[in-house]
Amino acid sequence: MSAQIARPEAGPGVGARWQLRFWTVFSGQALSLVGSALTQFVLLWWITDTTGSLSALATAGMAALLPQALLSPIGGILADRYSRRLLMIAADAVSAMCMLVLSLASSAPTSAPSGYLNSRFLVAVSSATLLAPTRWLVCCIDRLNLPRFVGIDLGCEPVPDATTMLKFRHLLNDNKLGEALFARVGKELQARGIKVNTGTIVDATIIGAPSSTKNADKARDPEMHQTKKGQQWYFGMKLHIGVDSQTGLTHSAVVTAANVHDKHPLPDLLHGNEQRVYGDSAYANQKALIASKAPRAKDFTNQRTRRAGEVDEVQRAKNRNKSRVRARVEHIFAVVKRLWGFNRVRYRGLQKNATRAFTALALVNIYLCRGQMLGWVRP
Image (cartoon, rainbow, N blue to C red):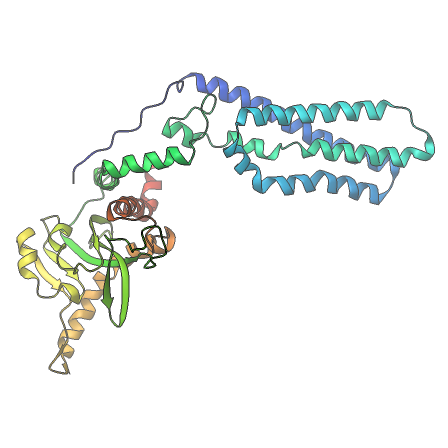
């Protein structure tokens, strides 16, 4: 695979102007946050000095910290759902109004017996000041790298909604960009010195799919099929991969229904320059298939050890030595299923799930090379 994906072009309005807008908003919000923090600090000490009461100090501290604790978990959600610009304006307006109320309340004359009541009033107003959602204003400005990468200008464009993301996913499926992304990542890694060697490990894993018929069509996914592994039946698709025996990186992949035998996509999992091909016993006695794609490759797949009810101990020992190399392929499946959560299909149809599978494998290669990639960017 030699397809290439062009880097997304920046959308209208993304250029040199974004820096001016960003630093303007950043400076204003930094001053606002510093001012709110100083107001909170001064109020706490003023109440302590005026009343000399620990209960008043505790009430003021709770009024200052509790709103932040309640609003912080949902701040990012609100910032993604509504206009960031309006949220910033509304939050700063509420803070300004509360500061005005505080200044008027502190300058109003009060009698000595009601001084503690007046301080409680100021505590209530301070809590209203901190109720202004300053915490999730930070969520509006700390996500600049990703919008810049995808070409979204937060100054004049909203965050894409679910419909936009759905159309983007359909675009990936229709143009088979998942496969192209997987190929592009492999090409970039090879250009950085991570070469594909002369040994390939082949294996396959089953990705489960819902077998229930409780849906609008009253039927299971027609592109998924069932298969028997051991004594257990599975329904879904099968992910076949070819992995370099030295680096442990995936260089080829095929997605089929679960009832397709592991040996059928075998030629598509080889790059043609192999000298050794490793695999479990499902690929045993497939020398003709291996030679059709890699004529110089030797068959190092595990062979069956039980014949006529007897176990061949010599062949069993050979399989054990081969499995020490073949075990590297299981690391790929562990990352795909455990870290990326791709142990069950998310969509109907093979093409949509194939796009997700190729993208996941591209991310696996990046994840397994993370140590070397950090060395590339470090001075």
